[in-house]
Amino acid sequence: MNKVLFFAHLRDEAGQESVEVEAAGKSIAELKQELASAYGIQKLDAVMAAVNEEFADDDDIIKEGDTVAFIPPVSGG
Image (cartoon, rainbow, N blue to C red; front, top):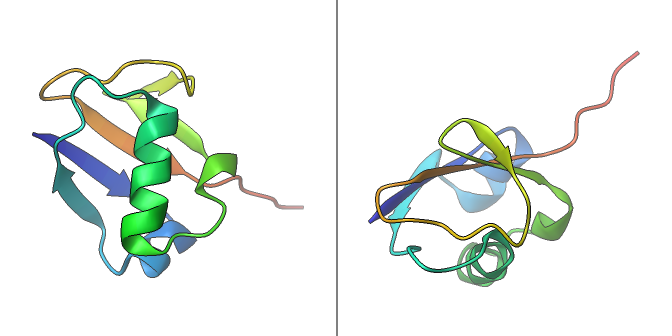
């Protein structure tokens, strides 16, 4: 199993701060598509991903026990 963390507006869209899913062997891009469909999250393809607190690319493969976080872009002034 893998823990997936949602930050900022993603948490609101998903309706929870984190979920447990079976993501081992999937790419970050595949997990984004799966979660967007399952939780109705808009524009998940445009957010940053981190695996075990290290930024990850969409083609990185998730391993058993990894923690994946999705972090939307932040703007400020």
